[in-house]
Length: 414
Image (cartoon, rainbow, N blue to C red; front, top):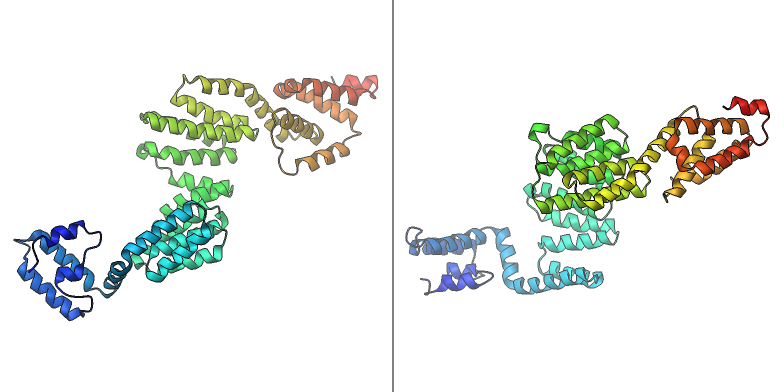
């Protein structure tokens, strides 16, 4: 028989003493545990003692299973110490004391070889240190302790850790492997693929994945706005003009459904962040798309209105520069000159290799005075925003390259 209050005392304990509940000891074999279980059930049937019966059943379910009993025995013997050491390990991780954290986690694993959390924290520590081999080793040790049905969830966890720590190429290979291993979860893996493709600037695949994941208009919900942001970014990077207008239109429809002010404020901050990234890159036309989305949330926001006002002339210049750069009738000389003025005036970092291309092109065309003068005249006629932005520079350049031309040559430029 249980002594009075035994179950009340068990409630207050962090770890229940299952051996005591069944009236046996830790040395008891499976048959003795089974025998004691039936004795307790007869003494505390569920009809009259439902609470006591649940405790007895829980104790027996744990102790009859060899694996569960082994885990329980470890917790019973080292539980408080493991909990204390785990707290120490977390403090060491948060304070950046990786060396002591590794030592503490090793101690935890030694006490409890099935401590999955210990392996995982140790694995992530190695990942933060850039030690991929050690990360794989300890993550695999954690997986070996899992039930087979939990392995798929750990595949998602592994991908998230790799992405969070910037190992995008490794994450991409892992994602491809996981999609083959778990074909039923392709959609979930595609969702993880978004930050991978975005981080690797693989906008073609980002476009394919986001286009596939965005639901039909009738099935769209407010939360899909974040997926559409990545869809829009892919479209902007790939210059899909027609599709961009369609995406923005759909995004505005979803924004109308978001009434929570905190959510609106957060989305505004996301749009402004994207605006800043494109603005700093000198991509003012793309930056405008995000400012207009932010203003769609709050059209009376004066700060946003000021940003848009500042952007308007820059968008015209950006658009002109883009069209000019694609103009097959203009010689490369005026294109690189226009780009150089654009980068310098807007304080934009030039594209990689631009400086070399610039000086090489200038050298190649240094004696092509008539061609350069004609191209400048074309810019004045067909790209007024570009000409007006750098008018004094164009006039100086025109004067330089027409100084040696005869009257007939100058007349032909008009």
